[in-house]
Length: 258
Ligand code: ADP
View 1 (cartoon, rainbow, N blue to C red):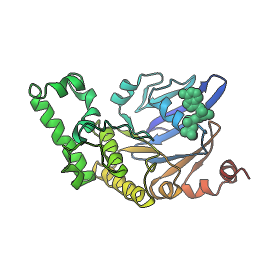
View 2 (view 1 turned 180 degrees about the horizontal axis):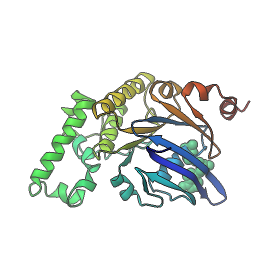
View 3 (view 1 turned 180 degrees about the vertical axis):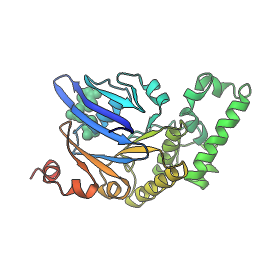
């Protein structure tokens, strides 16, 4: 479709004899929230890995914002405007909330992140500007957490870690955010809060941010997605509103084996 932000066409990814993604077509529009669902092993995380350049596809193409990004390396894809979070928290626990978020900004720094971290005085202006941006972002998400910005992440509960990870992704000002099972390790209520916060942050950022979310909690999918795509054995077996896909016999078969 014209105007789609992400356009994935015929993408295949094999690992040895296993076809993890099999000729997948998927479009996401600007500002759209797409739920990516499917049984374990159906290729959801591989899809994120292929889009972000971790594994190049064996066949097919990926266009983002009208540009062909097929086969680009992860830093180039990140610079193009695609950021992600991971199912398992990947924060540096001994670093502060602020430094963890600034890691996400490294590609916008004039020199490497560590270089800048070590020479904060020399790069004081740039550091101050980024710090202010990180505080703003965090305050939009979670004002009490913004006041704890200098504290180490170690010891903080999972919901705060998830928020920090999402801020780290958002500090790069992406146009597409990939969330890999954000409910992992959180209670039902925490997940619901986090989803509401994501929607609010997105609204405040102008509503243009597109999101693809992998999630097993169907309540989350129903609540926040505009559209869903269902994978099974690396193929898209169904696409549409949550209600439509939940009622689809192929989807029920894939999940329940009936
Ligand atoms: P999902 O996220 O839907 O659970 P994955 O994308 O993680 O599924 O996995 C899809 C299939 O690809 C699985 O059979 C998995 O074992 C395989 N796979 C994923 N990543 C790799 C890899 N790096 N090497 C080999 N096989 C992989």
